[in-house]
Length: 241
Ligand SMILES: NC(=O)c1ccc[n+]([C@@H]2O[C@H](COP(=O)([O-])OP(=O)(O)OC[C@H]3O[C@@H](n4cnc5c(N)ncnc54)[C@H](OP(=O)(O)O)[C@@H]3O)[C@@H](O)[C@H]2O)c1
Image (cartoon, rainbow, N blue to C red; front, side, top):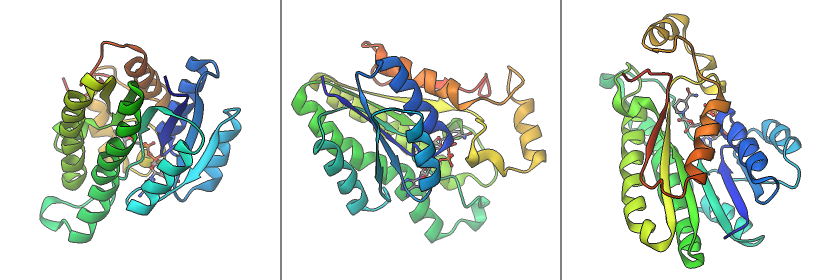
């Protein structure tokens, strides 16, 4: 078993909670690699909560950023966990107004980055004969919301990739799953207009928005349960019922 857990987007709301939960569950058995891109202040705050962790800055939409993250990790030890939490949901464009530039930025961050991180970290894990990858999808992969066409497409494709990698890596001792959050209160959702929030709230059976800690608990369950492979686990309070 490897000794490093990599969390991309650990400067973000969900990534930070995931990193903290993995650290606590592993009781120090896994060293946390906290990835961030532009928000060093938030990354420092995440690292301050996790003794022994280390930070890596990288734009994961770029091949050179992904290579830097891989090199930093394998230079310190063997990766056992990879959580692909880094992602973007903006710009919010109605279907008839989607832009080529938005396609590139959203698909590169939400699909290209996890695809090639899974390939490269997956090779390391398969060579070691064990590992766990958790991708962070979204209920919007399966649900219409004006302004989310490209985001929806990127997350739906990420779910397909999750299942394909689960199928091909499972025999090599590497499990691949995804967590599927609903509306979680983080910097990503902080600026959403109140009428849209109200509409979403009316669709959630439990009647409230989720906390990043709830997603983190689900990620830990996907990591710990050694018979979960190719699972897509909703954490949405019943938003998709
Ligand atoms: N919040 C929700 O309701 C919700 C619901 C469903 C799914 N999700 C998914 O959950 C994941 C985390 O979202 P969040 O709510 O925690 O959002 P967040 O607080 O905005 O965090 C986003 C994270 O992604 C990183 N990131 C963005 N673009 C990047 C790039 N090109 N290269 C490297 N890192 C990049 C950011 O890094 P810096 O800030 O350091 O630049 C940040 O750490 C995303 O994949 C999102 O799609 C969120």
